[in-house]
Image (tube, rainbow, N blue to C red; front, side, top):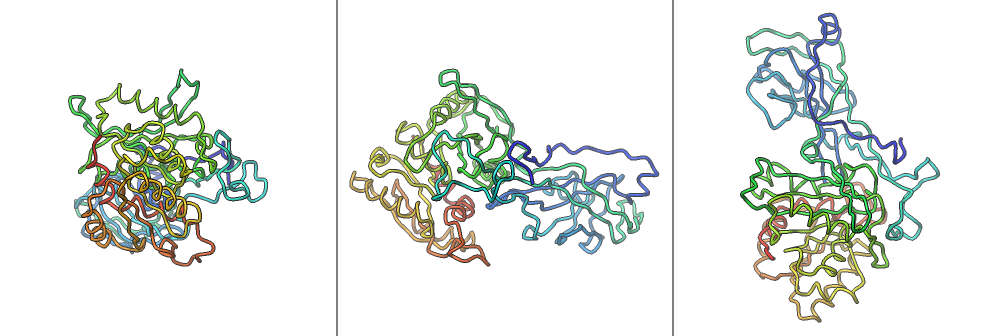
Length: 445
């Protein structure tokens, strides 16, 4: 385990071609090298595949899961690829992708929140709050290195028909490809007006064309991801990376901005740190640097990031065309400006703060004359069921939509309601619901 400043980052995404001497190749079997492949899910980053590079193209027809083994993991599929990226699947390629079950024990690279310096169990302050706005927390999520040992246990064939016999040696991964995460740039913004330094991750659309204009999605992480390591927010869950996925970008190309905060940005007393203004200044700076459509700025966040989103909507009404508010709350006495904005709110009925908190907020918005559309959904639904429920729900055409996941439905299998974290499991599901993301992008200022 490692302290916050010793945080282990999953390696850079560039694949290195390793040229080994013949004697080394014989010792390690036929593979030139192996790359660990990670993917971010709703609950965090997981090691989901190993890519083995060979001298020559391997025929996909003779490949099977029984031909490879990975220590401590379940092999689910084996196929040829032109690169370490599983998306580059082909009939014959120099890379063999050994796909792994993402639900395996040990697949998840995120580890428990712990105190820096190893003192005690760590975690957020007593009382369940994140701490005060501006505080540097004593806890952090740490990540193990993405690493594995792979062995070729069966015979495979090259494109030319040569047989590559099984090898008794295990090949250790020496590089890492982080799907989608590696497409973000890690940068920093010096806010001369405020005096803050803000680290951030920025996704620029593929084939960016300055003659066009693009939407921008601002995602802000929760207090548990507070860190001075820039990529932390990208590994935590889907809140940032889902918008930059190849599937979403094919339908909805956009910029994605994911700041990495080293301090608590919003607290349970409905206060924010100076990072609120600094983040707004960063958005403005990016809109000047790139062809970003100011009428299609969107904001979203989970838990503390949701609270920061609400605070921004109050302080800068009309800046964002729509807000996707996940598992957060705010002082209802302050939220009247939200009544004239476009919101999609998602909470869980198991969340002891956000559920009553958003009930109070939406009650105020209705008193202010806003129309609020409400529904209770089952967080265990599949994509088709979410689509059907959304279509029925969206037929109301309300600018403010409020969805609560039903009691007990965000609890993963094997966990009890008593031990579950309603807000964390809410965002595990919320960002996977594609029609909600589609709704966000249909809104304009």
